[in-house]
Length: 223
Ligand code: HEM
Ligand code: HEM
Image: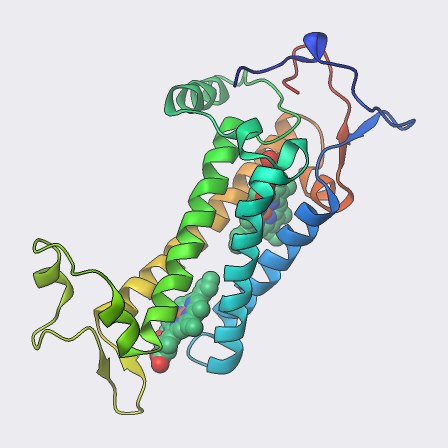
């Protein structure tokens, strides 16, 4: 989909305050519920297993909702509106480095790539957590390619081991923890990107994720 600049844009529904609604209600509830559920899963890991799992499944439900909302949600929630190819994303990052990136009313291409990275990593974290819960779940997976299997299986060829306190050990847990740590890194980069873009375009993007509204488009902005 080609970008539409403010000049060529169809009439936007500008409010008397000069702002436009960008993030719909459900998308905002999704965002802050996801932040709360992810934080809860992190803080309860290895401490309060029932809460950990409940928070993890809440993350799963929210990600599932977001996938559907990316197809049927409001304009700026739709994947087709904000997902860009690698060329456009790299060009945007180059513009950022030179301090001349355009303002996007919805997600900019770098932010959009981060949305995908966050959703994919969250899905992987939840999926490996779910697998760890029961040996039979791993058995249901299609046979692993021969090249991965030796690295995956430890000495006795088992994905599970149990420690002295009965806690789960083994490669599956390692993958789960690595994905959870990767999530922490991505979340930090995500918040860093939000703060940076807020300064560059003189608007508080975090507040926009609360109210749903952003400053109306100016000349050259991508709507
Ligand atoms: C308190 C810290 C956080 C703040 C202030 C924050 C703020 C924001 C803002 C302002 C946006 C919109 C970005 C834009 O204008 O393009 C956004 C989007 C997003 N954030 Fe965060 N975020 C935070 C933490 C997180 C965490 C921890 C996660 C993941 C667990 C996350 C996941 C997402 C996702 C998936 C989107 C895309 C929204 C959508 O279109 O569905 N955020 N965030
Ligand atoms: C986004 C969601 C999740 C995050 C961020 C997360 C994070 C973590 C982390 C960091 C650990 C390592 C704790 C430690 O030993 O230091 C852990 C362990 C674990 N997680 Fe998750 N997790 C999530 C979802 C889930 C889900 C959905 C399940 C299962 C339904 C699950 C099951 C487990 C289990 C069984 C362990 C091992 C606990 C033990 O040591 O016995 N997790 N998780």
